[in-house]
Image (cartoon, rainbow, N blue to C red; front, side, top):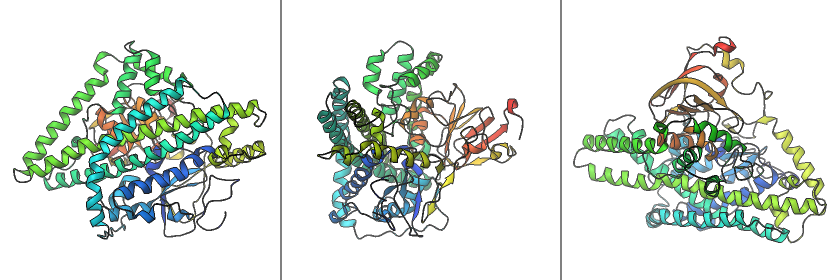
Length: 553
């Protein structure tokens, strides 16, 4: 296909075409789930699955009609598409969901995706779906925790079975790939539900704080959720580094994590333990006072103290309603990270299947290299008959992706997506003219809590290769669950993208470290080695002193 608002031909499954000048797009928080430039297999695996999952979730809430649960051909009629291989959210479509959903708004949804809202953005709430939402939303919300935990147990068992007994034939590997996509769709649907409902309840927490005239207290009210998966990963990593947990057990719990884990072609810890070994060495240098369990208990105390402060400020008449909101928040917000773990683990099942398919096709002489399988599409690999010339297809798409890797997209744009040339690798981040700017101009964004800390900055592009030392301030473009293990080493985190309910914000609050999101260009204005002061409450990152080893700005 070609033309306005549609996906380009089968030779290039990585790019949709959009021309409507009034539709706003952004990579935003979606880069947490699907970072960087996808391969043909990665995007074709997630494309329709993500769209269908999102629509199923919104229909389960009553926000969409049953006839709206469909796959549309126009980019402008989808929630997410790929432009030049990069995953992008349709902000106008997501704002429409916010306008239909009680308890949140179009602006709140935009803030979640962007971290900020355009000054001229206007909510257009509608009550047309209210009767259906009133019927379905409570039931869906009530069942969400049970359904998410049940699916978590199911996916863990399925994934471990596949890892311990991987497919040994092409039909078995193809069947595993199809099974992984079915599970991924279900997991992503529950993940969307968790994300939307968590955002809605967070908005209600903010409203309570505003009514109590306790500005900033919301950051201390949405932390201290003991037993979250992300803090469990950090705790197990600490135990592994201190010989309290064996490697086999660790990998059977967390082996699906690793650098760029949202991309099928990446190699996660179970395949390449090198990045894990580097983390273990750094964690081994942490003393007993740095055990993650201590931070977890501390954050529980922070939340309980904040809750008491809020209830006292609201008074006896408003306290019962506030307690209900806070109890719902304690239930729903942790589910957001469970949802991510579910679909990330399903994706790793697909990764395992894809590599098995690649080995079989290479052994049969259909591909030059097993890794070339990532240049094929999901539909091609699961069709009753494979295309004749797999080599040509894989080579053409590899060339297309190589071209896309030379450019980026703006943080937000309308109409046709503009391509921004990337600087050379050694100049791309933390070493640009902007990083030589005077130190008296602070970097601002969305402060999501954690207080204040001062330390040397570490600008990280790739968590697998960039060495973050304990006590440094982590400065990065965006994060996904594969970055979680770095957070416990950092004294604070500053992220270019994201908002108050992004992955970085949630994990940083659970670990009790300052966090700033939506800096926009923080990675280009800070250099590794700069002395910086991060205020996670005020939302400011200040360069105090340029790295003396690299000159001054």
